[in-house]
Image (tube, rainbow, N blue to C red):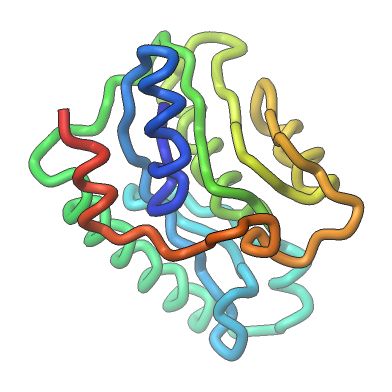
Length: 184
């Protein structure tokens, strides 16, 4: 079970404990639009796998050099965060295994899509890449279902504005908490 930091690790930890699964982290960073950082131009993993949100890219009309710089900064940030959270532990071996990607919710799905596409390159078990989230909009859930073998979303509300609106307490999970959850 791979949690996306930071909230995804907190959601994945009790599930992994309940089913006796391994817990680890997969760091993916959103590449945000400069004047609206929460709007995902795309996402990138620490290893450099990118997903570009074509609709957003067409609407904002940035120069190719600017887009490259946004993704480079996001990848650097992902690499730094991965070292911080994982420490010296190597990434988990995923070949031939079922992989469950978990986050605290999805909005545009760019981050989860980058994670899912990266995981498929690790040659997991056939029909073995699953996404599990507490909440996400119908369109994003359907789009992710085209990339992975199954998507489990506990809530798919008809009207969706943000992940945080579906939580009573959406306090940010701290890095120290994630590191503690990942301790063997």
